[in-house]
Amino acid sequence: TETEVEAYADLVRREAIVIDDPEPAADGPSPADPDDRFLVDLARAAPAHVLVSGDVHLLELRPQMPVMTPAEFLQTLDD
Image 1 (cartoon, rainbow, N blue to C red):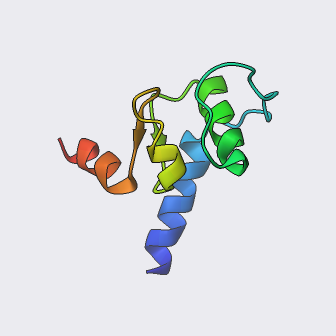
Image 2: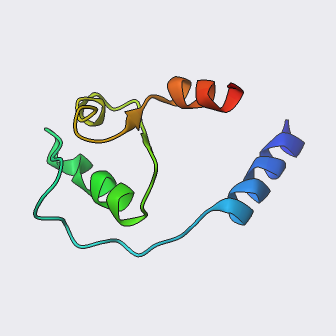
């Protein structure tokens, strides 16, 4: 509903942390798709506890960094 959308937008405004785009890292995980690199750099610069994505190239980085699908992340919120 429109009320739920507004409530969600308010939550994001209150809880979000905005950071400047970081310089590309010379080290660390490197996704197969170079267009995804900025997400890895942002997650490291934040520092994020986990990167949430359904992108297969980012999910392939699981051995190197914490990456979850949206469904997996939502499951952690229910626990």
